[in-house]
Image (tube, rainbow, N blue to C red):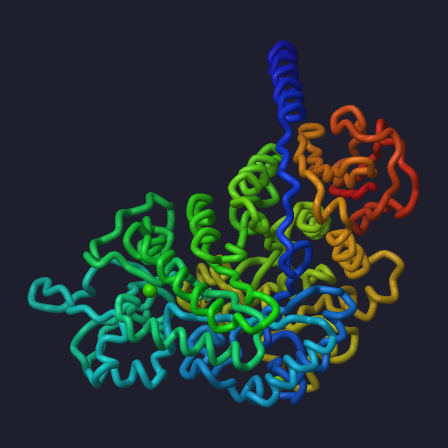
Length: 573
Ligand code: NOJ
Ligand code: MG
Ligand code: CA
């Protein structure tokens, strides 16, 4: 490349940067007072958190025995992935009784004990509500197969298509986990829809009886003391009634891979939002007597316009998966800025923004961005306005454990086959929590745990990080505190391209020092003049640096010349 071209590119970059600085996005300082604003929610994957009875699988009493952990972190709530009766085809997301606890997790009494103890520690408890499907072992489905009324119309049944004298599925729809989304029932002589595993038949949400059943389930758990729900796969509730073939997406994947089609008829249908509104109303009406509003989080990997519609339809937290889906280790600072600004710009007035760091369906943050950059995401989550959602293990920087084909149990992995399971399996991010360096990382006394413990547990575990002066755990505790400080809780927000490789976030309130986050995307040390580019005071104090950055807390920094080691991030105040 000629010098001239490079020079022109550099000038262009300066213009873009300067422009971005001047028109830096500013969010209004209106701040809703809900309990979840400016806090963190912690996702517990119950099979992997703590095993109390030595059977190798985590359980409710295990969670109860570790409630102090959440209190110590000072998170506001835990969301527990499904604990209901289940054949475990999708590890609890296939439910055969929505209003009882699976024996592997314990009993209803154990759950009541958990919520009572959690409440006494000031921790709210949210459950996973899984409306789109039941298990194929649910009595509703068993009766639906037999055409017993009224269950005959509880699921999505269609006749096969007669092709050359034999029956084929009604259309080309695919399951999220690969292969046809239709399964033949020899008894009923029809196909049923399953957007997930064949053990998870889709319920028919055009049937008012199904809607009533779901409302009863919500009420049941409100009666059992829950503070809200994470609603699973809500954008799959409704299908286009014409059941037309879906067009090819053009993605370079095998024909039975879900990503090979554009899901224009089986996902994100308008009626979804109507259903959500009725649940919002029902939950609010029923819990009016409670002093706090029940929280609704919705799980939908969807576009920005849908996110807005989820807010408007009554979701308090349309989960923002940008740090999981849209952005990755190769994303530029500009891509981060654009994505964050567009989210902040979309959140309707009076609603709370949210940032999801990780979950049980995706590689851990340490793997998505690299162990050296994992703290960047929790620091962004803390400094940006609203709610942060972390996944168990994020607080200590747990990493994925590579599984062999033989070790693979996740249906998403198993369905993909021995050549492609590693692209789809969610087992790597679901390994037992690493409490300490004892047997099974302190998770279980069993000879074998349901998924193997990550071999790195002697280096990465909670007990060790509690002892160390600098650790992911200590940093996260600081970040939880920071979120509640007035500047971060109520200040304005600007996201700034400080240099091509350094992203900055400033939170400001009149007459107080700002809170400033700097994130180095690059794998080498950079020196930045944050004072000029961010218009901040010449001196600020280090609140916290990312683990491994070597930046000590509480030192005063000259902001005209900040050294940011490779992949480091730092918060100043
Ligand atoms: C989303 C859940 O997070 C995932 O784990 C599950 O497999 C599907 N929904 C089906 O319930
Ligand atoms: Mg157990
Ligand atoms: Ca559905």
